[in-house]
Amino acid sequence: MKQNVPVLEEITAANTMLADSLRAVFREHGLLALNLIASPGAGKTSLLERTIALAADRLRIAVIEGDPTSSLDGERIGAAGAQAVQINTGGGCHLEARMVRQALDNLDLETCDVVVIENVGNLLCPTGWDLGEDLRVVVASLPEGDDKPIKYPMAFATAHAAVINKIDLAPHIPSQTATMRRNALAVNAELAVFELSCLTDAGLPAWIDWLAANLESKRRGAAPPHA
Amino acid sequence: MKQNVPVLEEITAANTMLADSLRAVFREHGLLALNLIASPGAGKTSLLERTIALAADRLRIAVIEGDPTSSLDGERIGAAGAQAVQINTGGGCHLEARMVRQALDNLDLETCDVVVIENVGNLLCPTGWDLGEDLRVVVASLPEGDDKPIKYPMAFATAHAAVINKIDLAPHIPSQTATMRRNALAVNAELAVFELSCLTDAGLPAWIDWLAANLESKRRGAAPPHA
Image 1 (cartoon, rainbow over the protein chains, first blue to last red):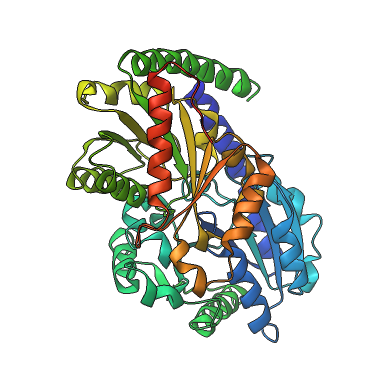
Image 2: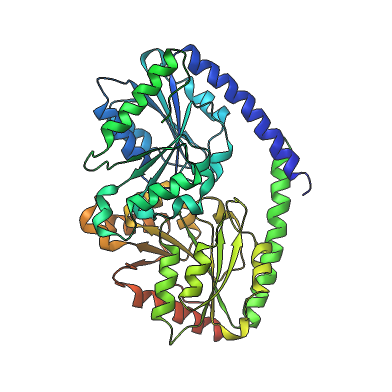
């Protein structure tokens, strides 16, 4: 049992090396890569469906879908009109760089601008695994409770942006959008915070502008503006 | 890296031995033990707050609160009037039997009937760790989406009961209570399914009756009725 920590370090070191090679692939193709982290049911796939639809004339989006099982999300993304590859982790709680590398072989990188890696629904385990992304985005939905950033700080501490989803439910629940924003910024003051609803499309334009600005900035060779 | 699987097996085997000793403690004290598994924000703590309040004249409940960090939930349970012990996993994604064993030392087992172990918010990792519980309960909230049982089947496959929480939001969201119930039963036909709201208390009495019936059955020495 003493071997557990060294073994884990060996695996994550190998992961980081592979993540570096993914970063090189993304750079070579002028792609912006996102790692989307959230609880199950926070609305990651709905966010992608609406982003693909509303950004259709500005951003060509490809999605790598990570799920413990099933291909439901990959099918939804395909139906939304974007390239999609489904990864099933066989119950595994996070994606690793080697899985993303295999998935990339099944995407046409010449015809896309943004690659979104939708991680397995889990606010904890994915935070320790570099997938070569430019931007890490945590999605939290208002009905999960405005205390989520305080209770699961790692996902917020390691992200560039936080999406507060399902704000249309605000009139019906005790959880407050302003409190959730304040708690997210208390964990990480550098976060770009987006409040939005994938049912009403409120807040989606600002989110899409942010993606487009980060893509442009990466292609100019500048550091991404993030916020 | 080849050592990873044997090491994990060694750890889970040790966990199962400790879980057996927890089972003996629960039996000796005539306690019903629950392991509550859910995504972050599904409403595990709210369910316990309302259960403690509404069952006050029937069940003395003690709670072991598992969180990656913070003591927010333990404080909420204490305020609701029940014994509570907080476990912080330091970012860890699940509880293990050794953590529960330590927590038990800080509870007065003579003055309670039901011990609820509220696991870390995570639908995946906790499913593989036996905590000596009599009953495993998965909580999923309606706004997470009625497809959750299909996408995260392990939590439902290994549970005795599924609580569908936040049904008060049904008029405002596409997710359907009947579909979520059907999907849960498709994964595990033996599940007792409870549809409830911790804002309106709808469905809480049936849930509390089920706990009381399982406690009585355990104390009679009969197999718990579960459903």
